Image (tube, rainbow, N blue to C red; front, side):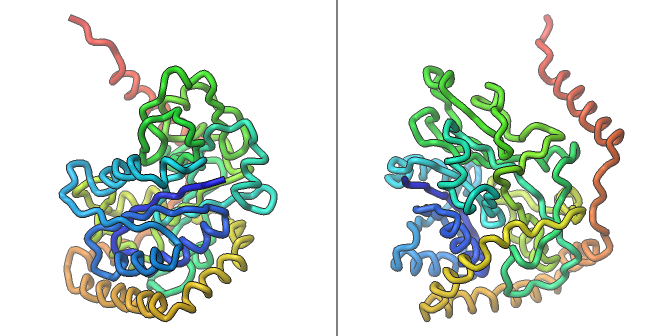
Length: 352
């Protein structure tokens, strides 16, 4: 069974081998990776990985009317790897599939949900844990504290990426879910969340976040290391967002994701398998040199950014800002009610 993982990257070579080794350990058979505007050798590293048979690399030069990520997804829709895949997932470099059932592989997850046509993998947001300096060490080992398993607000805590059966039910890829549903195929859809609950039909056509207030991590979760070390976050702000042509990260992005409430080391079940695969990759002298060069590039770029008042000020604010505290139930319910009230106003029919 062919399982395709699609990725877009810019200046992420220092993290690429960990991410790739982890998802090969999970059981993905094919990787389609798009790169754009790389200064750290990410594109060269991807070329080498393609030559070694690990993935397929496509460059994704601009301009992009909707941003590089959407341009990559449109190209992926037309690619033979997508056409030949049985299952497809689009993920980012800071997202790691973490399967709890069986031996932790995609096969085990599919065996647990044999009727599933799609499985939304709900984010579990991993906070910064007070780590200031970027170091060349596995992200999954450095950041082990996360948001609570159930939390009503912010709603972004329940965003998901969709692992879906590539059977023609959807005509286009999307960032969080497949798009362009075929009306004739929707009745046969069976979507299950990460705890194995059958989801209502609204998920077949829309929704990008899971059931609010529900623990959706029983069988599988998507570990989301959106922040990393404070130095890495400053560099992320410099890079900009992937799903639009412009748009910076800021302190609000940090606060809405920096939850260190609970320890979660469940992803360590992959540590030995992933380490063996990383070691095999680093045994290639070309890849090893490219990785080391990317690490040096990050340190140099971070030092350069600290000479700018704007980035230096952001770095200082990150050190001043404590970890985010989950809202008390009453406060969280208030925020949800306000959001629903605003949505109801938006959806009101126009009157003459």
